[in-house]
Image (cartoon, rainbow, N blue to C red):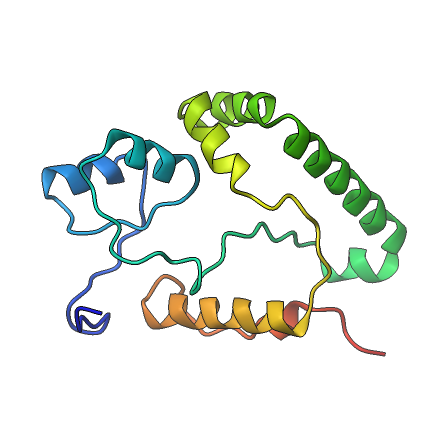
Length: 162
């Protein structure tokens, strides 16, 4: 901990495809990276990890739907969950092919995507209290640092209890 404050020392700026180059050129002092971009930066070398963020903000994919669809058509939601599980199983079993798809769609190299994808757990999990707490901590950090303009209550996105 360098004693830096988001309030006085750090100006949050959304990253983009040029963030790594901006860091290397000195235009920015730090960069939060993940996935294939992080794999590429590590492969290229010359940068140092200041703080791994996994304990603060996990690298999860979260799927949302409209509340009315979830409440009125739960069979559609269940079909989507089954399809996502099948896609996860395929990606876990075929990481190189999945990396090729990701690279073609989102840019980057197949090798960097494969590195990133192999690090993922490839599971669809039920929402737990621990998950909600984790997501709330992340939302609070995002609000406190200006990445989102208003506070949110993660639990408000969950199904209403009967």
